[in-house]
Image (cartoon, rainbow, N blue to C red; front, side, top):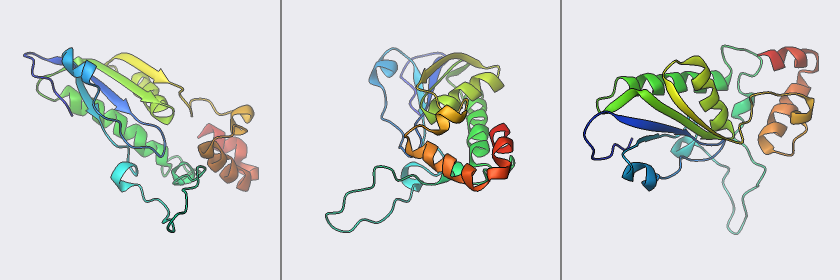
Amino acid sequence: MVIPRKRGDLPVVVYFHDYGKDRPGIIKGLTETGVAQLILDLRGHGSQLIRPLLKEGELPDPDWTPGYFTKGLDGKDSFYMKGLYLDVIRAVEFLRLTDGIDGDKIILAGKSMGASLAAFGAAFTNRIKGLILETPNFCHIDDNQLKLDKSWMKEIDTQLNSFKTKKTAMKKV
């Protein structure tokens, strides 16, 4: 968390990164204008993300994914995304209770999966003042989206196809 050297309770931007990525760096422009930042790694990402070992000279597979989207996909209580959604709520509550932060001036921002987390946070907490969404995914999965050429969608589609009889029920979870 970065809190600028400015007196009083400050607005804050919480940034949620994309699936399989790491947290970005600090945005100097926000700090210089007196906006605090909470930039975190999502669970299982950043230093917690275990990538496949590569042999010398071998390039990483651009379609590799960590497999989180399919973890617990067949149960609403064990679904990986549920943990992330709870983390969003906890982050907002943490900020609300943090000295130097104006709990009524919380802005959620994210890219791709992170944007869907930000949208969730805005929908399920009453503390959010602003929302910045860059290419939100996972907000609406239909047949066309399942055919996207994105590694995370292939991960979900492969798992859903293995549950042919449950595919409709999975979309509702």
